[in-house]
Length: 205
Image (tube, rainbow, N blue to C red; front, side):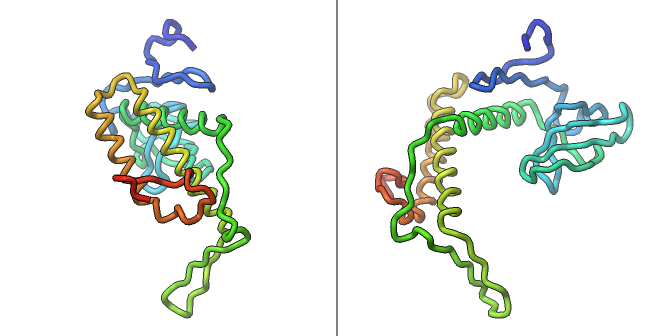
């Protein structure tokens, strides 16, 4: 795709999956809700952010088919149930999707679970004895923790390499990420190697 062929689009970023372009809209929110088209990013109150795959009708209430990544499924919705994402929200979403894609393609180091936790389970015990216990393999939970760790590291890289953010804004956003690391230090007990630990403010581990 080129800007010359599609002058109404502007470039968001470039990665291994190609260059991402988004189409600006006039106004925000529901300013263009009478004219949803395929490819628009929208927000649903229940299902979260999704992308329009089909939209019928050019005036009044439109009938739409939307793919919602969080549910990993398609759902029918009317234009009255959907809110069009703003230009900034769309650009942020596309940049995060690109970052996630690049993480999935990287040759990430092998992060190992501590020996004492292998073949173990995480048990969730309700306070009400009448309710059933829930459990899951520690390996599955550990994998999700490692995924969060890797996503945060890519987000740091994206922020540091951003060409629009000022140095002050980068520092401020980095501080939020450091606080997130600090909140996740509880899970350091699961890692085999200390080098893989989350590190919060002032070396908190």
